[in-house]
Image 1 (tube, helix red, strand yellow):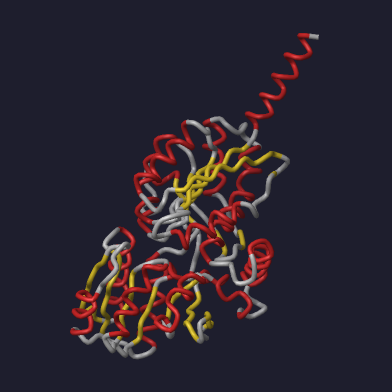
Image 2 (cartoon, rainbow, N blue to C red):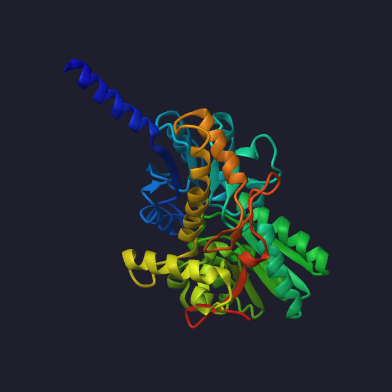
Length: 378
């Protein structure tokens, strides 16, 4: 009897160890919460089993804080023994998590925008992938739209952190390539309540257009200040504002804003031939079926796409090693890097040894805020 009981306990332990453990870190509170909450909500929509293997999700909130994100990542790899890290929401925190992924040799799929998270694919970044479009990819789309509409000079105001600096660098690079001149550059903190001084300097430079290099609800502040000062030029935002909270908080102040976004934002306006329309609409219906009409955002879809990549890669890794082992994490990294033709809500993912983003120009559309909603620009 004792031998049978011991056998049963060992069998249960072996089964538990065989679970695939996924650690998710998002900014569920703090300035980036409007991005992180839909990401967190999307975890509940992911499969509970893949290739017959149970998937155990552990979700932690970094409170939009870089130090907290690193602490959460270390907890997940050291205590929860996760096979995969997904997150986090913001660029500064994702950059800080790279060392944890590299040291523990745990694959990580970031949900943040900056190209510096995955480039260059060196020894540290070889474990890091991402699903959101990069600032470089989106800045090129913005500058192309500016050039096609006669913009010659550009002003910039953005976050005084890695997100804002990354966008400024990509704006300057793309603008120079198309002969546009950046005539003013200003920064502000995510928690600032006034940007009057910075906006006065931007307006004084009389740019044809202004790009706001910010994300989430804090991106409303400069646009409101520009309108309060009578600025009548074009105002561009980044894909970091593509959610309902930005529209709700910004109201009339963000009317007319132009930005690049993932196709899922306007999935119902895409032509039937667009390969992302079907996946995008499926995600929208699934999310809003659980959380309510109008609740979906592009940020949750970034995590949804990470889940699609995960569903493609895990079966490949299971053929080579058991979950919970260094061999499995290495096989999972290799499988993610070998992922091809995964049609997501935001684009079609084709990762490779030198490309840990996997997206191309099909992952972006230009949209404008019109009558309080998103309109696809043809």
